[in-house]
Image (cartoon, chains in turn yellow, green):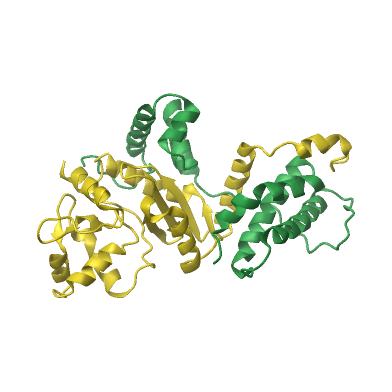
Length: 203
Length: 164
């Protein structure tokens, strides 16, 4: 039998392409890309109490967490230009991260145990972000105290911008850094999200 | 600025599948589709930004369809242009057998929720819409599943900290 579609098969060709079929082809592409080392950035969206979170990972680990207010499409475009355009929706690589975040939001996890790819941060900002996990769950530090922790007590504003540009919020807990007067300061995911995370940890 | 490759797949998946199906039987067309996007993904960083992405993909798809046809059949598919060297077919899977085995032992509902949430990357409300039941019930099933997975010797979660 000839496998090529003849006139009888025209109906098949005209038939709309089934979404489930495309989804299955997509999963096959994810597996093939991973196996061939072509999946430079894998991502998924995770629904959470602080809104939809974009999770992105390189082979080196989790590289970016983005809140909805950052614009997930914009964040992916920015990852395409700074890291690699070889980006696919491929949830498999984010299984462990998604699971740990779910546990965190259920108050079943206080410390994250994830491989992190910190390549999006450089210099002083990277140094500050690396030290932030030292602030324990449920605690807060002021921007000034963090400046002291990193050995540069006058760099309060620079600590502020290190927190504001943290590519891995929640997992790298910049939400635990607040102003000396007790007010929240800023947050990449919006002040509501910051308040919500601190509330969750205080309970 | 270059789009993430996912956007390319999203915009052109159907067109490429139609091209493949116009040249091949359905199963072979699936192979050609996969080969096309894998090749495109490989070459994508070098694609000029001004390039016509659809024309580029259709060109790759035609070549891959010829390759797939040649791999599956002795008889040549008549075409206007000469084919490139055939690709090596076959898509080795990712080794996630350990995880799958543990998941298989979960109660059905929990297994489905875990598969949809961590295998397919779906939200609780999307899962609830597919499986029926409330979003809260779906969330609880996922929590129960994670609890069971943590008890397993090499569960999805690498940390043993249920006291949090």
